[in-house]
Length: 290
Image (cartoon, rainbow, N blue to C red; front, side):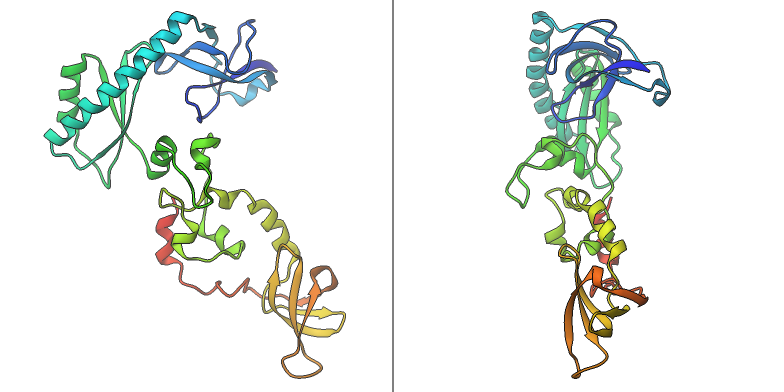
């Protein structure tokens, strides 16, 4: 086991582990660490804990020191320079007539590199842009193309629920979300209702997926032949969250449908059909997945 501390470099970003090197830190403390990009300023997001060292493929780097007032001043100066760099880069993009959208600018703590984040529909030849920026800033320049999910995370905003976007509020990493999840949760397959501000499937589809998968294992499919307390019948609809199933009975008046608890039913012959949307052509919705 090895002692580590979790560090974030952005307010809502991935947590990286570092060796406290015998130093004591509290959540929210500013720290200076050495990363692959150089010296960086981060904040403690997770206090000291022990983790199995076999989880790490490379040695854990040590925290250099707790951030000083001078370090915090440098960070603030970098923030001001980022705003200036954004305007300059925007003017250079227009001058070069490039089809790209500048999203954000980030200075490394030691100002050894400036990163420009952008989105574009396809590949962009920005070699001349890099030369123009390097001649202005006299330091290393890196242009990084990001996806629409990352853009939403950086820009922030409100979701259709009226709350701030999950990705900009608390999600450290994006998890895969699929049309299959929307189907299994019996949601409308209308793209405008299941996609977020970024134009991709809503991240919140993932939150309850484990619960739905567990319920699906216990619930007979639509079309399944089951034995109910009132006799043999065919499942015509289900309500996963309530644990109920509508069954069309074979005996009794024609088209008689009764409702039973799923726990009261015994499956005689299951069906491959899950719900009424199972036969819908989903090819037009695939672009919502990433």
